[in-house]
Image (tube, rainbow, N blue to C red):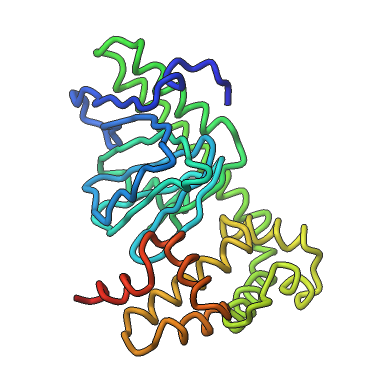
Length: 286
């Protein structure tokens, strides 16, 4: 994405857009932020509208209904309305992101067509056009007249969703339909071996008789994230479920999700979820 956009010179920028049009999908707020390494967790909270975050650079962590996702440069993620979420930048490589809040009767339909749902909120677009449309939208909001800014932004929004839907449908028809039968055993193998400390992409590829690059490519196409990220997320999700049950110690949970050191597990859990396992255990189902 070009670096000549004026808004990128700021630490944070956002704008409320005029709400004078009756559109089936309507942009409400758009913005940009360059997060400080010490910025804390946003949430847990719920939002009343749909929000898309576009990560320009850096990394961060996004938790949706107890499932934590590692987000990095080039990813986008959906914040669905009325879902419990939190997110924060990685302190070692804090993200810069653009965001778009929108409403309307077609929001859910368009998100579902783009395969962005509460169960699959993360995607890494193949086309840079998606990010360019978002950046152009913000830049135009700075310079456009009030009478034209909302409809211009709505046009960019439709282009973004059009590109997302084309990408996801093409992937589904040309890769996923052939890859699904190959991916399902991979998912089952990972699930069965979450407690194995040595579980790795190399180990999974070897078991499936795939090369590591091939496994990574079809896995990313089908699941929207890398095998390594998926393994970490499944381990953390299982750990959260075990903590919520209040039937296991932290040491037992660490061993069950592939960490032979409870101390290391606790550090990784806090890094990805935002609080320690003990804190999560104390807060669970209060």
